[in-house]
Length: 124
Image 1 (tube, one colour):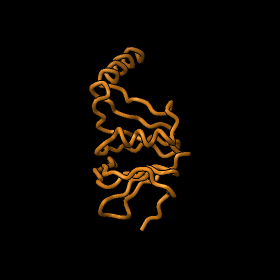
Image 2: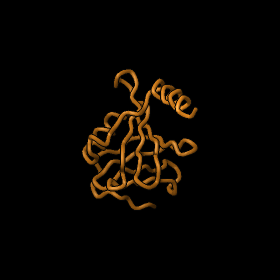
Image 3: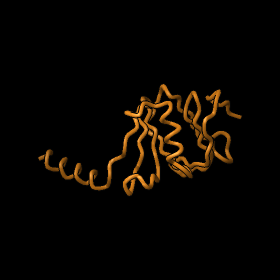
Image 4: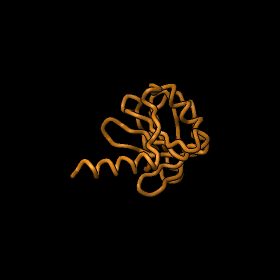
């Protein structure tokens, strides 16, 4: 069994990790870091210490009414995408340990299209 990073757990909730294939399990927010444990395979887990977290990116739709997924961008190991039953509760728990200025909205569909069109114009 995997040893948890946290000494005190603030929140445990059903969640999904989007790592290639979809993995279902538990999302855990604690005093030392953010963790995900697979429901059936104990070898599949993600542990991210708070010192390693660079940004927390939330995909916000309908003016904040619905958050389908959120991502944790680390300083060295890339971005991990998750979703959970109640993402607002998870993000509020994460906000206790991550600077609120480091919690940002993701780009909307139209922002991505705009950037693509602008980059085509700059290349010529």
